Image (cartoon, rainbow, N blue to C red; front, side):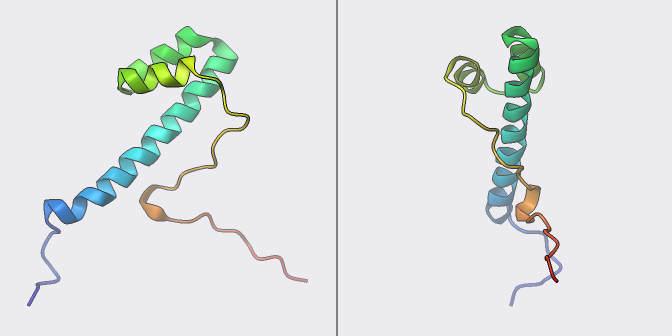
Length: 88
C-alpha cells in the first residue's frame, strides 16, 4: 500500500517540472519578441541570454518570421484562467 505522505518519485515529478519549464520558457520568448519589436534585436538577444534561453531557441525566435499575435498567457501548473460567468 502506498503511503500518501511520501514525496513523489523523480519520474512522477518530472512531467510537472517539464510543464513549468515550458510555460516559463514560453513567457520569456513572448517578452523577447516584444523587446525585439520595441527595442531591437540586440536588446531581445541580451534578455534571452540573461534568462539562460538556449542559443538555438534564441536564434530561432530572433531570426524567423514573426507570428501575428502573441501566444495566450500560459498558466503554471495547469491552472486555468478564471472567467466570470455572464449572467443576466
